Image (cartoon, rainbow, N blue to C red; front, top):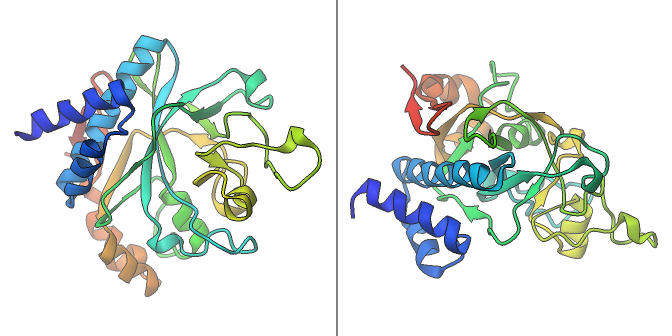
Amino acid sequence: MTLIETTLVVATMALLVGLALPAVRALVNSFESQGGTRSVIQAALNSARTMAVSRQRYVGVRFQKSCVSDDPTDPLKGLLNAPQYLIFITHDDFRDMGGVGNGFRAIEGLEPIKLPDTTNVLDLTRIAGNTKVMDAVELNNATAFSIVFSPSGKLIVHDVRVRNRHGVNQPDNAVTDTAKHSMDEVFNSDRNIILHKRGLFIQDDYGSLGLSEEPSRTSFIICDRNLLRRAYENKMTWTSYLSGISTQGLYVNSYTGDLMAAK
């Protein structure tokens, strides 16, 4: 099967079965390279663009590392080695998003897709030097970003605040007030993920964790996770690694959604 055929297969299955079949999972897991990661992302972007047009809604792809911490006092514990996923998201009415006009939620029925363990996908928009990506908060911010398409299928820059499907701000299932509860299995609060095993990804209501409302992106970079880990642990993330590959970013074509290498 050619690369183009593989991309079409993944994109088609994304629409028909939510990328839930074991065969698709195996296909994704076999893409243990930057080229493979690019193929999976391209397929996801194609699917998101198609859904935006067919549903006449803002639809996008969210990149984010899962919360793997077992310590509610340190929600970002283990972040460096945590797997990164892509999640299909859609804009929702502010009345269903806790009054947030730029609220997005995970699309029901489409499971998060784990990206290959050998790579990480980063937003380099705010990374300028060694003062950036030096701690877990900055790393979390760089690995959590969204790409959004309009109902016309065009790539746009749209403010994004991802929340649970109930639209609850900083939900806590331990309190007696059920209005503060959320059973969302995708996006939820750090406490609900760690203490109540509800959700995989911390929602965008925690600025102190590097997660808050921000504009969607039009480009990103795929990097080698082992090289990133080594540079990060030496506190030389930019100088010893990212600065050397910063010109290798991928840009999303505004009209077709195709990935393009930087010129």
